[in-house]
Image (cartoon, rainbow over all chains, first blue to last red; front, side):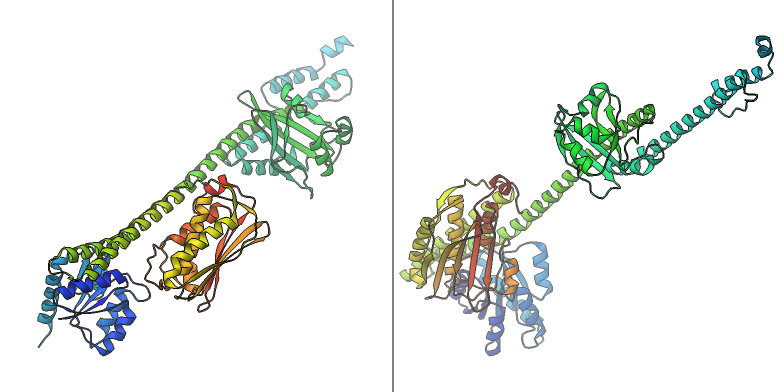
Length: 127
Length: 482
């Protein structure tokens, strides 16, 4: 399974990448929404792990772009944010995220959570 | 003659009239002719009735006015009404109200209204009471009339207030003491541009007016004081609400900004503790370094947060002392030049004239550290950061110039605000708490200085601040967020 990490914090990109690789994912990482859009022109991951608070184009805006774009409208999106307040979570789900995880996440269960989301989204997509 | 008088038919009518007057009926009709002794008695009775009637009407009118004035709440409104309504009792071009202050040692002009163009003795004018002619008024508790101020001035050549009021064109005055609950509180003066305006005044009427006004003025003063207190409490409330909101925003952002590195530390330790984790020594060493750096960043952020909290709650205590600015700049520039070496960024001190600057050395170093480290952080590797100091307009000006991407006009607006999130990114993966410039601004403002940036996108940025020679540190430090 191929995962695209969209995260402005280089430390988070690095450790998340290492953990997901360790768990057998194929990982690409970009520092923001604009770069992610560019990445998606050429490549199509199976899931996007998306940070929310980012400069220039934040996670909400990027997720709206994904959903508005036919080729990525059903791409599984897991938001990962330092903001855990109900408003932020609701907003994340409203713009189309399939799951919203608040930091700090439990690394031991991250893989399971990503797989669950991918399966759930796949089940909803007509064959 | 006597027998004729006793039998005079006018006498019983005079007796009836006198009884009516005694009961308060002033509209009497008595014969006054023929003008013999008895006729003159009749005329005297009729004049007495007229005079009593006039006095009665006057007092009634004053009562009406004073009760209407009394309905006003603010002292200045009340005095406006007095100025407007008292013309029919007293001739005046000017009314002034002065209040005793400093425990009765000084008298201060509280309110002045005049139809003359150049008021010289204005609100706020204050003079000691001792030795002034007003002292006599307090001592006797009686109104004082000056019929000829020019002559009065000649007898008191040292009186500044007399000189001022003469310059306004005033030539005579009537001053009544205001006494509330037996305690003198001030004076009200009616003044005219004509001499002898109060020569024929019935002092008892003014005593009555002053008595009424004393109560009103005291009430007005109390209301003004209450209004001032209320305004002060409201200002305090606004400030408290602002601080409370700021605290909430801070907590939310701080939680986010602390959670992120904490999350990264947790993920890194998970990798290090995981038996299937990165096997190479170099990778493991890198993760240890990450954890160390992230922990340091969290510490920086906590220190910045505490700094802002301290400054915002008005607790920034500066310890200003004369500093040789060039020494401080040399030290800061050398230290940062070493730190910037790995990035290939040059840090140079271009000019720093010798001279002392009054400032808190620890805080000023914090400011320089912030500006220089920012310049390094946002400059491309291999570029130059230039520092210079100069004297201009009774102040020191320090500039830090970089060759970074510059500041967009959008970013410039929030540059010095808390947690400003800018579009520019550190060029070497450095961390920013988003609080450095906000703290720097507060520190410079507490020194009475200003801070700013000159920049055009693509052409670098020059951050500058000034510190004036003359500063009021107590004032600056007690005005948070000002």
